[in-house]
Image (cartoon, rainbow, N blue to C red; front, side):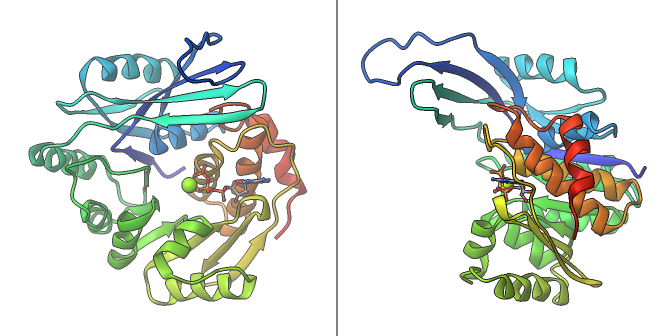
Length: 309
Ligand SMILES: Nc1ncnc2c1ncn2[C@@H]1O[C@H](COP(=O)(O)OP(=O)(O)OP(=O)(O)O)[C@@H](O)[C@H]1O
Ligand SMILES: [Mg+2]
């Protein structure tokens, strides 16, 4: 298996709980809380580990909340490496309203970075990259980090011969495509915002992602389509994988589970076709787990053989 490094610049300590009804002014007595070390890249590394692979999670950490985060992460994942910063790691607060089944997600503001901090982060990323290995960048960029940070990381990956995988939106996604990366995984909304295309028909979706590959923005594009599965483009062509029908409990973690399965299968030497089916199975499996839980390996292995492309 080729080594995989995941990068999380703006992790969040996920606090999840439930309450019968969300009402203003009253004290809302919640049920027991669950604490998870969240954030795109960290989630991807946790799922890769669950699926039997290994990934090094490089993640930012700071302040007292950062120490709590570190403790939770180290209990679950071996070999995670912290990039220490001055600000306090952020939190996100997820509340399930039992009487309606609604999910409320409050995301607190993260710390603001200093230039010396993001420059030091680039050095740590460079050290962690290896030829033929994968670097997965996932999640938002914190305040203070420049918009071209993703492009700088993509450039470092190219220089080292590593494969950069980007799951981001807006300026980060645009920078990645301008610089040229190995793989991008937008969802429909993210690609629509970037290109201005409506993307309502399969034909238009295929045209847009084929063009990204032709223009060398990305060697592989994985356009995830929620309940409709995903569409993949590479120099070999375009193919679609339909998602299995599942009883959705919570959509949280579908994108991260998808990316984790895709990269772990590719890093294992699997074909894009196999990796694509595995990714769609993992995305759907994430819906079977409640709350902020990501996919479980047994659900992925059960769904995967049923898929075709
Ligand atoms: N309702 C669903 N039924 C079956 N599979 C689903 C459903 N929603 C998502 N998936 C699976 O998960 C994958 C990723 O989902 P989606 O396209 O919603 O990603 P995303 O918008 O990036 O998610 P996230 O909000 O986690 O970042 C899909 O390609 C599909 O395989
Ligand atoms: Mg996503």
